[in-house]
Length: 189
Image 1 (cartoon, rainbow, N blue to C red):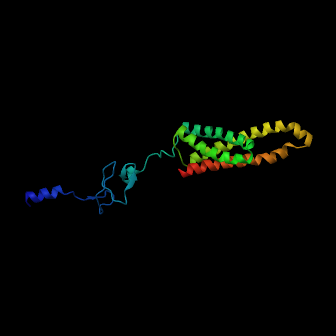
Image 2: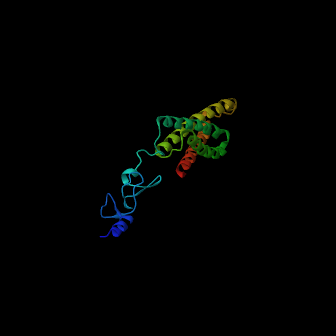
């Protein structure tokens, strides 16, 4: 072999072979560890292709939550639920529209307060917070409305159980609509 043939042979890139499949030729390397990988071993990483061992994140930033985030999420959702439950009785059945958008706004506020988080844990914390808050807020609104109507109720024989049967479904439906609005907003992102 002449020196020109050796020089020409070295200047051309040589094919690589996948570290997991030595029989497969490849021209791709892992973006992190620089090992050659075939296309069946390649995973899309944040800035390119990665091998199977480098491509799996240790923790998923969208679904993992710190203890502070886990505590703040239901507290903020409960606060929003308090408003939903109270306003459900103030606005009548129009309160359902308010409740739907309150659920969506709750998710937006949480995104700004704790960062963008998704997943089943986030959905559960928001749903529980909204439901608890709506029941407490709705209970307070029911109690104050009943006390304001007490004089009228005494004259007409209108009882608390009839009042509760008329108004409680509105609060419960509003709470469910708020949870549905929040769930849709969490699922669509």
